[in-house]
Image (cartoon, rainbow, N blue to C red; front, top):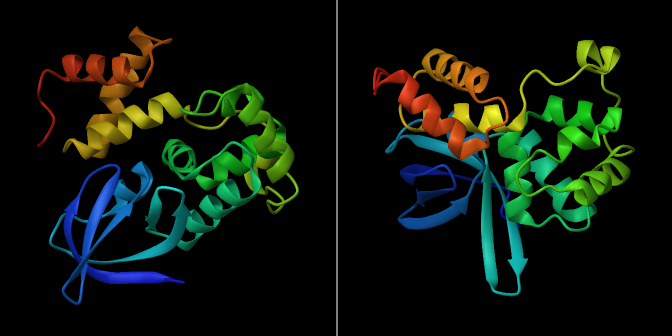
Length: 203
């Protein structure tokens, strides 16, 4: 098993990176959350990895942190109906704390808003993961309140950051777009945020 890879970042995108390790280029699938945390190429980086054997071949998945890899493994290994790509969508749409909080509360409606997760899969997430997560501490677990950011808004914000927006600019643009279009999906929200910012983001 390949535990981690350390090398030079050759190329990165919100879904995939190429990492050169001792002259060999490794393609790794990543989440949007990991992409946001990566420095630009050609930086030296370390990614924790998970080798996934599929019918169509072998795929390598990379994670900036060990916690994200552990969550990926929980999703893929223990939740029926969730494959590697859906697991990456979940990881890119929420923080570990938000996911644990939603599962602990049994918040099926919130989980089903994540791309690729319908009502049935959200139900499976709650059933399969509730006893596998540690006790949720702190304000989120105690209050049982909603997570700080819904998956659609988070995806849109991270997409703007990936396009070169500063975090504060992306947050402001997406917030304004969300108020204008409260029921919009990710793509529509991104388009509205881009229109509203009028190209003023620092790129």
